[in-house]
Length: 233
Image (tube, rainbow, N blue to C red):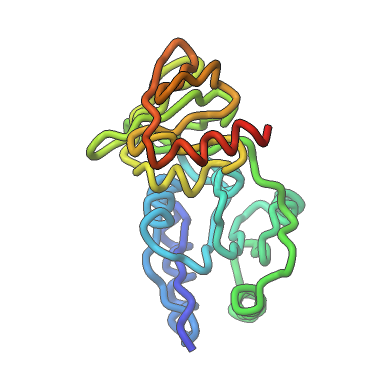
């Protein structure tokens, strides 16, 4: 049976060491890497298929709970923190378990066994509603963007421009990433270089789409899906 791929996200070196030492004794788990903040973890999750994440709450840049809320396809999560008063929020986010530091090996093993069972026998129904926003990395920061504020995205060679109500944001994510993570009932690929928010569309004329004071080309291979979306709303 394949090992579960795991990451540890904690800004305290000692906490990282303890978890890594505990995890060395679990043959069903492979530690891919440790991260000191959500930015690093964000990069890993976008490039690796991670099954389990140990996540601290109090971290720089963005808290563990806010980071978890931003993920649309989160792995199984075990919260590790020195703050037991956040437990209820953690369970509202459907975490596997909530470990209060310092963590004993016995308590750790109980949480890990629950995580392994969760990953290998997934829950039949997701209990957490998807958020109406996402975080993207830009200028060494994680920036929160509400879906309703996005008008369209333009894919360049190595990056994507996101055009919102207030500004244009440049990120190194790919168009494929956004196509997979944006709500499919709200956003649609209209061209190999463009994704549009359906609520921002003003008109369609031939192979051109007008929205938010911009005119975008419609690719011939994308027009059929676009028209299906328009007629279904």
